[in-house]
Image 1 (cartoon, one colour):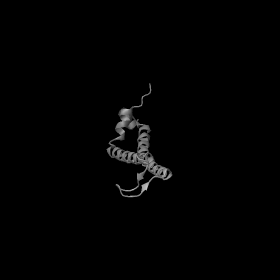
Image 2 (cartoon, rainbow, N blue to C red; image 1 turned 180 degrees about the horizontal axis):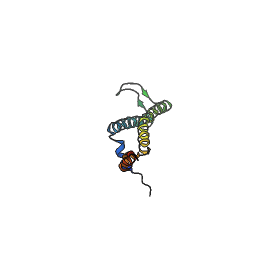
Image 3 (cartoon, one colour; image 1 turned 90 degrees about the vertical axis):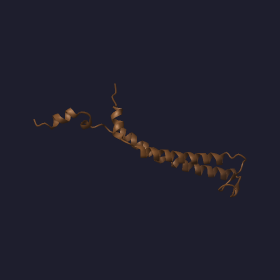
Length: 115
């Protein structure tokens, strides 16, 4: 059977709370951009107010609404790149081989003895 020693690998990763917080922040940001793209793509009454609150021009052209939605969706996808970068680093650290010094102290002692 394959012995991956996941517990030792997970211990070696250490405390990654800051990275987890950054991932959650970027996931929230990406979700907000995707929600904005959805709200622009499927307006309730056919038109969208392109401004803060009720101020701003009323946009009813489907092509322009599509373009705004694509821009918001692209930014949402772009904000997920730090999440994948962090996950790739975690996978790379988990795949790194465990050293013999950490796992087998008896071998380390026998190797250091003159003989």
